[in-house]
Image (cartoon, rainbow, N blue to C red; front, side):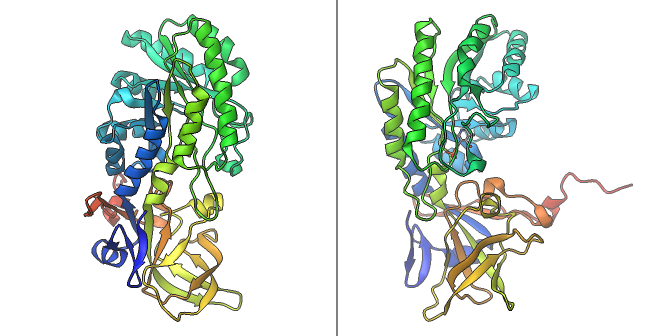
Length: 417
Ligand SMILES: Cc1ncc(COP(=O)(O)O)c(C=O)c1O
């Protein structure tokens, strides 16, 4: 990612963040399309092997249409977890045949929409969904392609709030019950079992959990193949970590290479569903300092961005580095709390962070926010959501989402008569 200081001014892919803030206002998400393309190509190249493969970008990390389009134009598919994400994937031009639909609580309307549009497969996580899908497939007169999401009961060594593949998590079907469930599926003529999938968590920085889980899923697949099930693919999920502070995650290429190795010579296609690792590093959130408040206990740097724009620090104690957009040589470096204006004590991006003391009006850049930033933004405190700009691979600053207006805030609401 080309995020660096040029003559004391922070710039992304050669464009000054100060100039972008002047043009588009703050808070502002800015993404490097080149960084997204680079991350996607690394995974795609490393997954290549003797059998077909498909990278299904997990939309939840950043579902903006221009981001999805960026990946779709590289040939990637999509992993969606709601009818809304399915709508976005199709709207952005992802072919339905490259979409997989995961999730523990799909509604009948979502199941029907997915089958209707002809997606690659529904990834089933509850036994109840099998019967529902079988019935809908019967009505539509065409079989439903499904994969079973396996819960391998493996510790991914990540933050407990983003672990998904342990037995106490709500996700996936317990691995020990898969062979029995497959026997049940044989009795449901509307279902066509085409794959097995897993996804053990997010922001994982070690390969061992992935490998352990993938080996288990691969061995289940081998059993099913010998029992005559016409499996087509294994989907090893997403979850690869990125460097926010001092983590040392495997590279996307190392991760993908390790998964390809686990597949060995099984005659199956290989899918993966990375989200964070394709977009996290591509984004910065530019925000303006609105005030400095000194109390006997602390110094607070107050921003125009808040937890409604970027909730990761408040939700997961996540660390994001925060840097001045214009360097202030000689500014005293002090430990400060960097906070937003929302009426919650938790509306704090960093506590006791050493920062060259800014002045009101200065711009700061919060780094590594391309994933689970804008996608988790809300209107809490009736704050319009931020605008988004993409710096395209050929160096243009392209607005990809307008800043919301106050009218947007009340759209769909009705006054009492
Ligand atoms: C089923 C599924 N696939 C893929 C992902 C993407 O994970 P990540 O962004 O960590 O790569 C998630 C995220 O939690 C998920 O639930």
